[in-house]
Image (cartoon, rainbow, N blue to C red; front, side, top):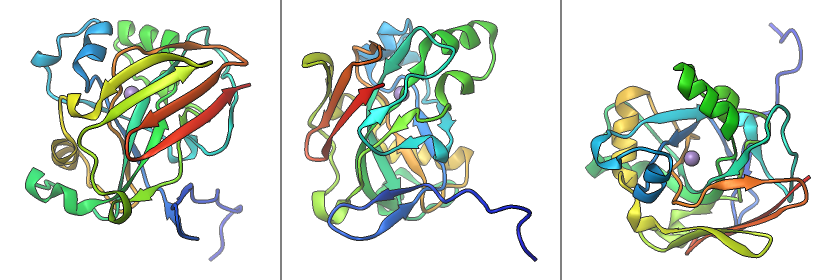
Length: 227
Ligand code: MN
């Protein structure tokens, strides 16, 4: 048997310090996982279980430029620590979750906030606000064997040299083991899955020509321009 047409290439992330590529299966994202960000979005973080949405693997963007997307006037950055899984399963206990982790990257959960807000108000799905082309800029992966498992440290983003978002990984409401435990109760996790682990306070809009510089202590820096 042959394919009707050539399949799309498998989305990948390069692995720092190697010539290997990490093949991406799914992209899960955690919503409102830092208290101050949950509050700025109008929610009380203490009252909510974690919730998740997805981006498409093909939405990953490697490189230095990000196209300003269509159909939005409120294109927001969300700096996030990204977790990459080397194995998976269902109903993984939090105590076993870190055995599934391959490594980490720094990503941006780019959001058409106006479209997302419209969908929230209408009780409709978020894909048009979250899962569009080039909505997931990401650095190369850094294996945990090289950098360990970051649980604290600064996470921030500058736009045109001005600090816009700032927080600390230790401020996550649901830590990475618990994110994996919750997610694996809802989905069968697989090798190749990425988890965008939520964003600290200070999200805001960018416009064409803006330069973003995101950082997570002990992981990496992401530099990208909006074009
Ligand atoms: Mn996010």
